[in-house]
Image 1 (spheres, one colour):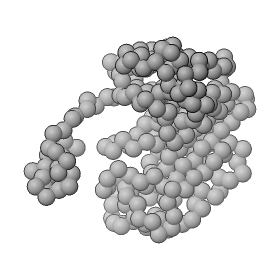
Image 2: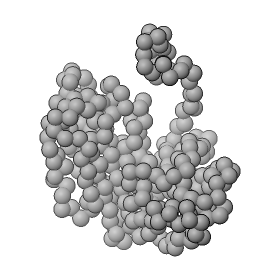
Image 3: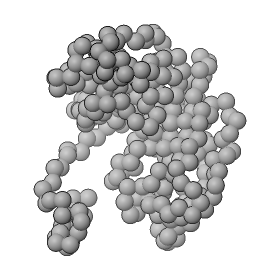
Image 4: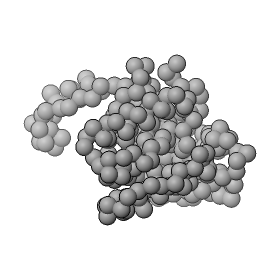
Length: 276
């Protein structure tokens, strides 16, 4: 990636719109390990809510999001470490009130901060926390803006298991099919399906840039006899077997010939954590 950027700079910096914004770069250190979202609520400087969701492993080099599940299935002792660094960092930045979305990786050197967002998380974050822990981050945010003391009631055990799969385009091409996830309808675990692209839309794959989101699948179970592992198994079995609804721009690409969606089946949370 570094070589690609420097080659682009040497070749195009005088005429590229990218470099018109400036030629200074901020490089971030690469972290190994697993990534997590931590949703925090502060009430006048007190941490009144601090819960973790697992981020599914991303496809490099673009690191586009693949999915999430809540509650976390990571070892509890490591969850405690992750929650501590997330809360300590948020407080160290001087925040007193509000809802915060913190991202952390647990690396071979322990937990490492990625970022603190002074806002609620996007996409399915509100639903994940509402389903799993009964806490509505939107309501808490509104009350914090009014300086109403916050004290969400948090159950001792999760109320539900929630998982979300963000389906990325595996290669560049054109969407050919409508309702290509229709076979999921009616299943007891299915919460919602969202299509972000329609037939005829041109989408980008990792062969060109950050992949385009094609669709999103959200799954949910409130059955105490159904584990998160059951929910993850359902997603794996019903998504990895799908044929992408795309006509490839370049049928000779290895990804187009393979004609499958990327799915982190051999990585956490579908397998043991990479960091022993």
